[in-house]
Image (tube, rainbow, N blue to C red; front, side, top):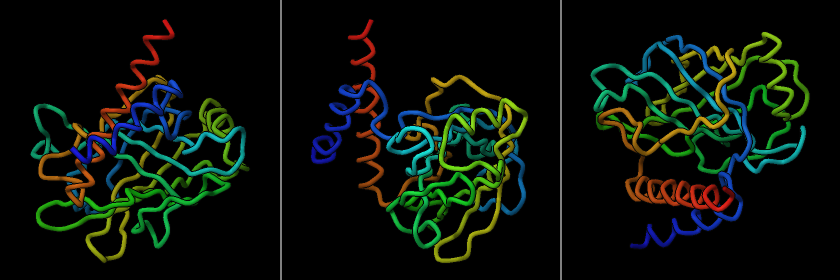
Length: 228
């Protein structure tokens, strides 16, 4: 009941904005994920889709929070009902290497550490996930248009995904090569598309997130129907 009440504003705000509350505009690209280390989590090589965005949606190249929403391939034994993907939402820059649930503002795509901000529980352990954009490296400011032009010019977005177990150091596990522009309406489902035996921690936050995501989708759907 409490989580439902806390999630209700996400429906109202999405309806009023006719878009996502956060990260309203972004660039969607497809590509491939390459394994570069012991994944620790049930991830594997394969096709990947990612959406790079600005959290508040500031215009042009103005500073903002960086968001990377990615659909990653998972191992067959972790797949649930033929869903062999993990829809993962990361934001940052994140303090202390990604272990603090507070994304900050940055003025550049390159080097910003985006993080899950809260850990995932898997096989009795807590895991943190973070990522960095490492290419293209010569873009000034935080502009979605500049990033889009780079991809269309044949300069892919390269993202390194890292994982840490508990308080251990982060180690690279995947390298994403994103070079094919995709449907901007691409929408992830971080509630349903999660590997088997992986869950967001703590459990109350997972429940709130599920409610908020559902409310946000309802609000966007209502706004879409009213505009037609």
